[in-house]
Length: 266
Image 1: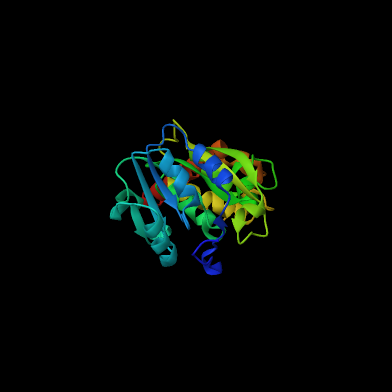
Image 2 (image 1 turned 90 degrees about the horizontal axis):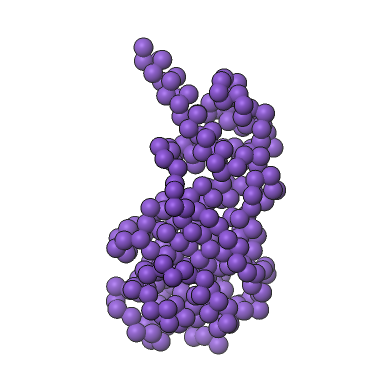
């Protein structure tokens, strides 16, 4: 038993199986030289990450009880064990250059962690770690699938997702009520150019928030899809568009909004 109590409000389920921890640590690519582990808890995964001898390993832990435990059981430079909320941090200040993110991610904030990574995708080259199985399936889902949604689109525009393996509840203390899964995201070599990221997020979220409606109706408050060249998207629904098509649609909406703005100024 660990000396740290799992706290429900932090979504803590401590990993207690060394074989699973070893497998997760091995999923980080050989290109990973600087790594941030989110929520190390009692350090089961940390132990195997240390064996990889990365140039730098930084732990971010919000639970003060876990921080005390880690300081007692591991030797870290003070700047490499940070007590705080990952979601509120400026990631560019945590590490110089690009880095990989890993962890047994708390299920109650796993989606928020991914959105945070997207905000800093220019320096997060890779992510590998544990998610609730349902969330993992959503991330890797392809268009046309019922589980395909906002996370699927936004992640797949910038990263290549891989579903690596499923994890049983029994490897955690306390055991969660759901299965888990480990996935890896590798940033794409070529990212979309001249893409308004803020508008993209707005288009994708608006489209999926009314996913049963056609895009003509779902996006009516944003742009009129009756007009050329947007009319080709009008009768489609959000889940029918691939990530690349969402990029194309966003660019066409931006062009149309710019034209409208310029016309109103004349």
